[in-house]
Image 1 (cartoon, rainbow, N blue to C red):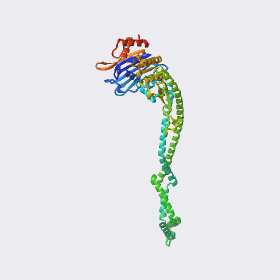
Image 2: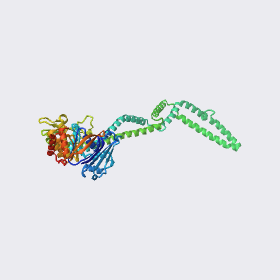
Image 3: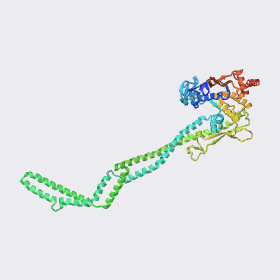
Image 4: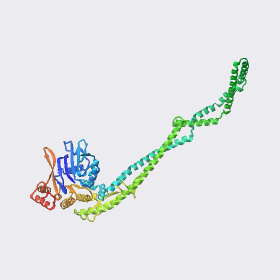
Length: 573
């Protein structure tokens, strides 16, 4: 429950402090006096977006402060405890809105984040501002209202969490698939390289050996002639070195008999002769291996050409070619790993998708039951607001799956979204004999006001909020309907603190507490003031609301009659 509200340098408010109490509190005043600014201040303290444009002209910052009384077992108390605050101390929220857009939030005098503020105030108060009618015309809000009424918000959050868990998996799988598609050409190129190198069956240093063989084959005739000449010169020809060396050996043998020192030289000449014989024998063996083979030469040249092409493509040497083969094999393994990643991601998608579809189906079933109950209760509420013959319904439709919809997010032909499988539309037939039609299409302003109030009254009974705020709930109504609205607000105030801004005395009369908001010019500056009205002042204010600027004895009498017949609050004598 809101206990105190303090506003400084906010819009046209200079310095304002209001103490609130349980029951129904009425705020009244001339149009433009600043009543809605008070509600906007409360909205900011509950976590709405702030702007430096809200700061009073000439000030450096606006400061807003609210003290709430917290139920020890309520969701706000649990949120405070989770964030390290003691709910027994109450809840003091302070927001400072600066011209430099560096706004600050304090909770119980500790600097806090907007996330913490939102968690604590989520169920603290319900505000129906001047735009509630417009929101009610937006069909995307109908589903939220239905879920609030049906107590389905936890299940709705579960669906959203599962959807948010699924969405990155879908994005990851699609990304991997795109990569796989993009890499298919790369795979084909790598497989071609792998096949080309493997089929070549490259041996280490094969190119060097083939170059030697190619040189020998190309010069076979010349080699035959040269080596053959060498054999003849060394051994087999007339006057060969071997023959002449034989004569040398004989002469050295004879000389050795005359001089013993020449005997070793004769032995050496014999060794040289043996070496020459060995050399000739090896050359003859070489000649036997040497042949002129044009076919073999073509084969060697073709093989060298193939190896050289590989070397040009893959690094310049056979070692680089074999290294490229190893690298290609590793890259292909990595591409195979991409397929494994896709399979693993799809397994996760299947598991999360199943849980998401099951939760969405459960949510849809709950919505169907809640829709029927909400329709009955709205009709009951409207009956008490002079719309007794009106019919109200909630049309639930699945979201048709599109051709591009993921199979994981499709259930019975419908697409699962963050809010589930459904969309809701409020339908109304305000007049007897008419078919139900979309609320947005046919409801008048006064009918919308009553539907807003009916929904707020219903939702307030299902929400854990302590404070319900109505800003101009009287839009489009008057007379007897206004009185019924006032009665409804008073009934609601038995279970919640209700704060209501109104221009209608038929509603204001039911207030337990009544504040008047005025706009005055002080020292050349416009400023908003607020005053709690005593019994006589309430009579004057209701008379003003009844008769405008000129207050007559008749309007005063009417005002007294209204108060005596409708008020039960502490401010009425």
